[in-house]
Length: 246
Length: 317
Image (tube, rainbow over all chains, first blue to last red; front, side):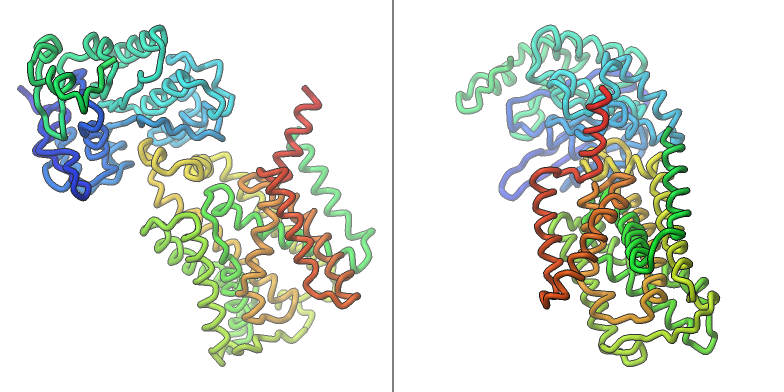
């Protein structure tokens, strides 16, 4: 097999007495969809922050497109083609929706007119075209989720890290995001997603990595992982952490 | 439409000295000059949201540099000295920006950093005899345009107007380019910017450099308009407050905010200063500023210009 797009090896991060991520190893191949799941507090979002350069790991290594990401600032990681969304969405509320996406497209297209053209194209694709000239602060939750996606997409990534882009959405809205993610992937963008919406995970992911207490406890195809006793125990066995997958 | 309105406004301002008396002319010079300083501050303080309350230091560095160079054996004309002064102000801005941005000082901490640097400058200059010490520098009036001095007050009017238009032009240009668009996003959320590939440190530094350079240029005007530089005034917190209060009241991070703020505040400050000064209440104009600032924060938190624009668009709709 050729070199994977993203490879995470022995990644660790401790916050005081809490080992948030411990010896985490996994890979994402070119064009693949991989899901990172686990109960609340399992270290998924911390893993994202470590991969995207927002946190510095205590140990281990992240390699993307063959480059060691150690010491790179988040914007440098992004420039290599790795974009992330935030679980707690962070639109620029006072900027218009199209300006929000232009912040992303301007990186690869310094000319404002071209950046705006591309931003509008992304917004049309995500069904936000009609909202383009409104302030982002006025969007609904579902729209803000899609804006978050639009902005990440605007940086023209090869790998997209999606942190709970479906949480809090109704079934129709979730379905819409699932379709969008699939369409984005069909263009060759690899996707690593954190998600609690199991139905979406099962239908999208080609491979699932399960975290519990910062450690990888299982990895494999969706059906295999769903029947893995360790996974069932992590989710259901211990009543203290029984965060029911919705 | 916009261009036409701007053209008319500039034409009116160009013609205005013909009908103004000497006092009104002085007030307009100050309106333009503070609008200029407000525009310069607005680049880093308004658009980028990095609240510098030490911008007086750049006025001081710029003014002292040009005045010292003019008085030196080389007798360098302030027209050239002002750029040296701007460059030195930018060096100081670069140091402040580097410390603040590299070490992640935000909000109050950045405010304190900028105030601290201005205060250090004030104290250092007060204690260096070569720079005039606490008494400061006095510039002898020659009326020689080469020395940035004019017999005719109208010349100061046009120079101040040119400065204001220059800074407004720079801000307008930035607004339309990637640079300015990035700055407005940095103000809103730096982490989100980084995630989208924006090198936030570099852009904050650039904003600081441009802002401090322009403010430093203004120092030369200050020195050669007032013919004196005193460390307590040019490096003092009151001047910094004068610089930032206009764009904040007019609308921080908007193109016309600093100009509108100066149009409101400068005459108000002058009139109340004269009025209260006559009745022996020196400094009472600061109370007027304070009341106005509270009113703006309470009722127009975005500033006067965005509120006005909203009013007009609503009427039209």
